[in-house]
Length: 542
Image 1 (cartoon, rainbow, N blue to C red):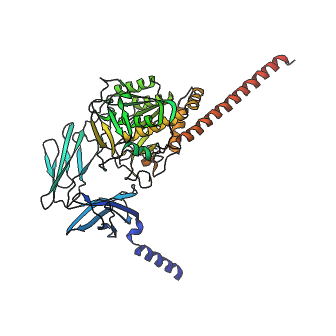
Image 2: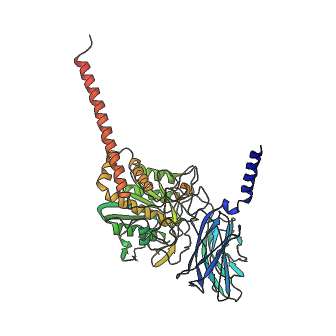
Image 3: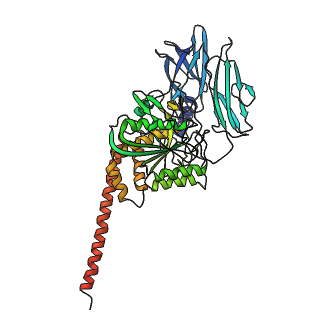
């Protein structure tokens, strides 16, 4: 009896004295410290978990970067503080353990205005919540919501009464009267199931990543060049026939063949030019004999109709491509003709790649046609400035998720802060799953080109159902991913294409061998049947 009581007392003491950090996980915190927008080296910073009071200190390197580590759980508030020239500054962030690293920057003696908002696709009459993300010793926040109304406070809420594109301006001020401004365009649209290009997300890394850097991350750059043909179609807002340089490669976008199901082929919105540049760079650098086709189905606002979108997919099917890339979608419904049409393309032996959407972090936000089980749904990840190190990559907060019941997306690819051509003359740094999907579509096209003869043979042998081959491509992509986390957030992981041609070759060979075995079995059964029939006729029973 005394022994049992002792054990109970010991267990009680253990649970009573266990620090709150024992319920939390190790959490890496990194960031940059600036003074008047220039990096500060050799500055000691203190990071505090305001929920537990635990602290850690670090010193910035030559680039102004510090690294700290402490215990935290999702929802905890972290605060950074530092001092320079008698100026003290602080900044906070909310922990999200779906990200392997928590970024927390600090600006001393300088203001950097920035903000985010949710929901990402607001409707008229729906409250929009604005979240201040600014750096600096801020005492005043002035908001202009773009509809003739203004507001104050750090995190206001505003409701738009009608549809429109509203330029929201945030101005922040410090005690000395210094100020900084930033702005974003918010697209307010009435509820519709019509397909649309997901709203572009603002970059978190202002210099942006080049297309080549993202191909390096995906190991597309590691692939040798193929001389075999491949045909890729993408459905978007058109293409502007312009010249755009990516590192040492000059892209001539006039090489993209242009079709339309609505109006002319000009890119009045700008989005299709960006998507086309990604695909063109991959095909130009990795395939000698390629054909890239754009079908315009979206207007100058990035909007379309169900009929126009389906017409575009039907036209794509008639062009007999190997891959169709779609950087748009609609809200799924029971009567989902877009999803059904995309599935028809896969039954015709066409690999369909579609962006998952920009409506995360909520679950069950995958767009159609990406939601279809035969379609490759692509989410977006953030390289966190370390191109070849995938360990610290994080999922983009706005990247659409599946759920425990919906195993989507299939994989992710870079979609954060990518530097791309926009429209006729502009270059922008943008974020969105719109730009993740063409990277995957391009990588798949190279793998198909490298397996051209075998790929066509297997498609011919399994003529009754093209999904046998397209599913082989889909599973090969998933098997070659760099695994990261929960499937309905990351899918199979970050797409990696250096091994995809070999894995796809093995799967195609397996299908070929299975067909030969099936053929031998069928011939054997027929031979035995014929033999028995002939034998019965030759030696009838008396």
